[in-house]
Image 1: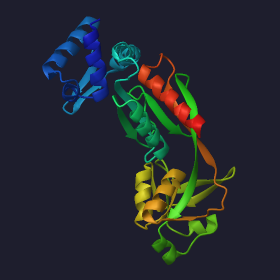
Image 2: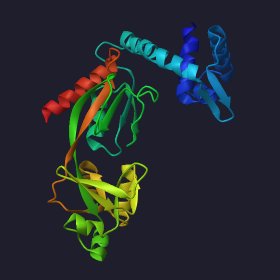
Image 3: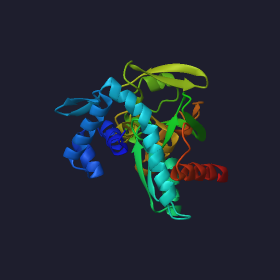
Length: 289
């Protein structure tokens, strides 16, 4: 098979559009279309369903993508290794992390101080991304992990804090128990579905009704600063909001659990020099604490 056609095929799957792929790779749309058509003809299968808004891989196209993506990624990584200057890394590192996760941002900043020619694209989201489909090299994730295709290393322990604007507490009162908290407007992290927040105290689950729930912590930070609700935030986010916006912690004496944050990267291939350097760098930072 034509390796260049496969490279373009992988890029089109990831971008979902020939025009976006053209812009990203600086390759004419006509060339991409011709290469994809040639690939489909050589395989005698249709790889994409075409729509006005873009393209989507067929079932056969998705299977081909899953088979060739890792191999194409290895070729890119090999190029980074072969052409990197001795003692200096150069290339792109793709990271995902929870929004506002300052420890990870600190590591990124320090890593780029040591390796200034490494470009980093960081996707900050609470959503769990598909590392292969979304082109993520290293992910930082909280909570339970599963799967045999990735290596996961614990790097952080994160607690939860409830914070509120002083104006809201002056108006509604300061809660000292979960029962009192439930009487106030409450906001917290949640996926779709359900009208209650699950709040762990020790190993016991409690359920608190909410006025606002979201799967993006930045939205919860806004609600807290705007004085709309008492909000549950990760401790690093809560500490930042208290320092910058004068929020107040409530229920500070309640035994809320802590959660592990793991650094995850692919196990099915030998990591690129950049991924390997970043993983080793984060490990050194943890040991130094």
